[in-house]
Length: 110
Length: 113
Image (cartoon, rainbow over all chains, first blue to last red; front, side, top):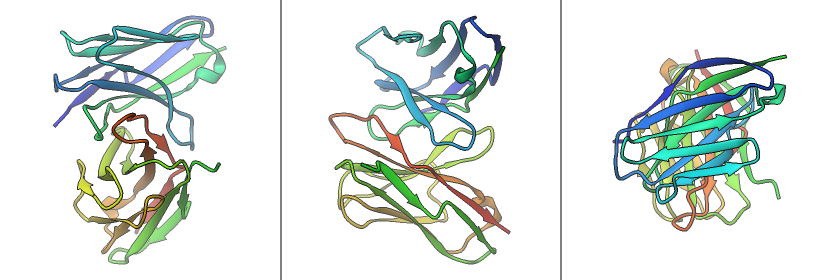
């Protein structure tokens, strides 16, 4: 099955700086790559996703890039704010089954 | 529009007891999923239902059973709870083949002693 690795496991950034989280996947057939944000005690919420026919997608301060050849994708958060502090999960799938990374705890320092 | 709802929010069981976690969605989604979340391990798929009338195993199905009661409801049953099943359980739903975006419920925190 699909194996998704996510790095780093923790990330501390100064408010206003950028944060980058990287994920690799094993199954070249995967074609859907969502990112979820989970605040403490809350449910995971989809923040952005990308499909395999697209190399990059942006939504305000958040962007995702995909390199199908290398089988990795990344989340970029610019101009970080305190409300960006959360756990972020990447995932990969080629259909119904999502395989998640272990998560990155992002802390934005004021 | 409540989205995805789950009951109960919290549950404590003794080893060997059984229980059913309930999940319902009001978004007319075709597909529904059950995940467990353990510290440091992300979310792992237990079972999913691609459409009403079908269910399939995910990554960690042992010790669980599911029922897709109708298009709205998807339940997860623990027949004989074990301490290893202590976890937070999330239900999710998606439109289906035209879109795989999954929307999660608020979760059930289960402790097995």
